[in-house]
Image (cartoon, rainbow, N blue to C red; front, side):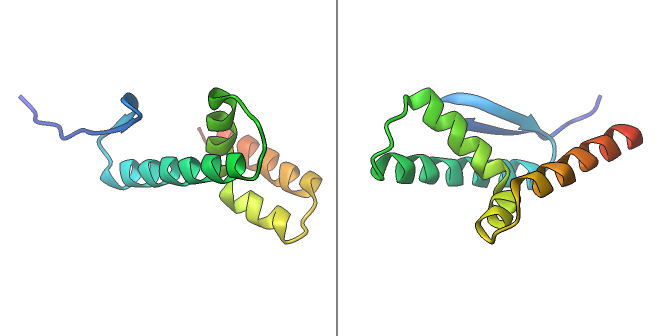
Length: 95
């Protein structure tokens, strides 16, 4: 019989991630915290979104923070999307 430690990340009472990797759980929890802060910031700037859409948008932005940082520094969206597409193809080929 084996004993497995599981880390459960819950957000607003909903289980979002179950993993055996503590680092992955910590990173996901931090991403959700950043997403919450982004949603608050977006809504505070007067952009009216439903709660679901605000959460979806802020999670997407948080998950893609590195690409977002490149966009804010002036890199074109096409360039970033091409890089991401190439990475997805590379991951599929290795998977």
